[in-house]
Amino acid sequence: MLDSIVKEIALTPLVHSAPEKIETIYFGGGTPSIITTDELKKILAAIYKKFTVVSNAEITLEANPDDISHNSLLQWKQAGINRFSLGVQSFDEDELVWMNRAHNATESLQSIRMIQDTGFTNFSIDLIYGSPLQSNERLLKNLDIIFNESVPHISCYALTVEPKTALDYMIRKKNSVDTDPAKQASQFLLLMEKLPANGYEHYEISNYARAGMRSKHNSSYWQGKIYYGFGPAAHSYDGRNRRQWNIANNALYIQALQKDIIPAESELLTPDQELNEYLMTALRTIEGIDIQYMQTRFPAYDKKLIVDAAEKFIRSGKMKLEGYKLFLTNEGKLMADGIAADLFV
Image 1: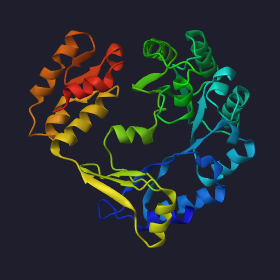
Image 2 (image 1 turned 45 degrees about the vertical axis):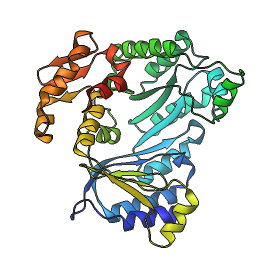
Image 3 (image 1 turned 90 degrees about the vertical axis):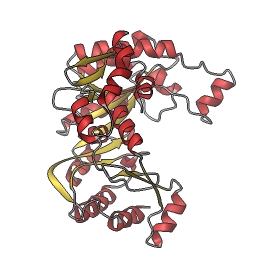
């Protein structure tokens, strides 16, 4: 697998003839913290050989709390990792057991402290809300720990039940309570109240950051920048209208790369799709839809159509129009996808 990823990096054609300046590198998908430091270095070396990587690049590694140790952190730092995305999910023991997580609440707390003790200042934790076990009181206790530990970035996700998972099976067999959309909505509102009140900027629907600690990597997706993805199921985007995604099957991915073939499919977005993607991603951010930018990038479309479509949401208090910026209120964020779909051309 590692050799195949390295080969894919070497074979990948550049969007432009000159190498792009790479500002962020993100090791994600599954649990990349289980591979060795030498393997991480091998992938990074392939990236540095292929691309021009800026000197202060943000290089993130996804990790689970039970993979964190002082020794592993020192090795990752030496390899060039300077940011972590930590799959904490909860600091509540009962919730972690219910979610079938490999780590416990003590390991979650210890991992955060070890990251800070090793000199890392840039990291994020994932927090799940809206599980059947989670009361508002339990959620507030989670937030108190986050505040006390000075966590610089939090990604908050409502628990979703995916088809054909163990949780889906348990709910259908009445061995577990299903999620409650009304409770999830109230807890989302609680997060939007408590996190900004404690110094966190709600800069994207699911993301909160202390000043200067936004995720540069994830922000590039929402800003529509070029990105390259390597490995099974990885996606790439040329910054305009072409998307590409690799085959998800590990064995077929490896077999193709052994023949020097990148096993990928691609699509060209129509002008309507390009505009709709901008509307959807921009609406998720604190900056919102920039009507002037939209008119410059998509001159064939009348900006008045978008403003007119937003009018009913402005009247109902779900959106605001300030100058040339159109953005969601907290109430509107509860139904962001539905509002975006309503604005689509």
